[in-house]
Length: 244
Image (cartoon, rainbow, N blue to C red; front, side):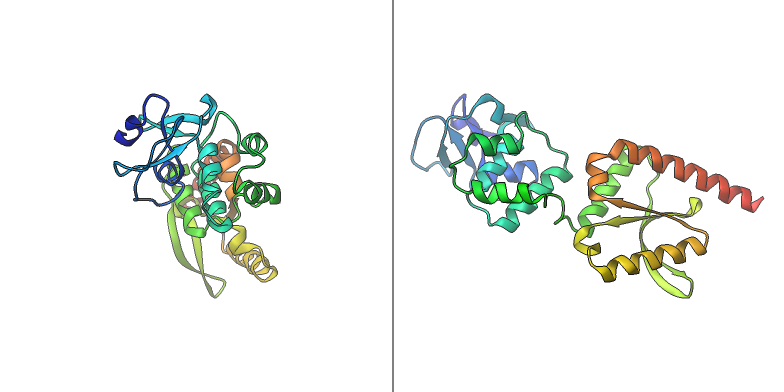
């Protein structure tokens, strides 16, 4: 907060420091601050000179900071393609929003350093594909809490059909398993076939399996929550009925 205030009324935390504040990457170095004028680096602050339009500045934790889209635009000038793609994925996973979209900023600054790399990631449609299994698990638990679903058990080893499998998430009393599909882990023919064999063994043992993707968690979360609430309730009724 102090670093942003030191830059004056139109200053905002930016670049790596903004990425760290917004949760897009890990950063613990000197604060980066963008200001309309110019001044030499000093006071433990890295200054950037740029006139920030109003739709590229926001407040986070009451700190003036560049919007997620503008922050990613700035990071494109310093991060390699892989790390930049991961930062974009994090923005999606955290459901961060900006007044002006990332695509709009790409068009606004066509000659900016790193813009070709940023455009390539967006045009490839690769956003969300680098999310890891552990990222998905964390995101799913946040999602469950947000929508009032009971906390599932996670990473549970089970014997099904004479083989041991590890279920990503399950509600035991509803006999419902949720498998979290990241294309980084499930996009090969071998993995595809193995996943279907696991699903078949689970169903044969009296479990239902729901496969949940990153996109569903971030883009279709309300509909997904509604469906899972119904599935959990139905599974509990069936399990209770079978015991009576």
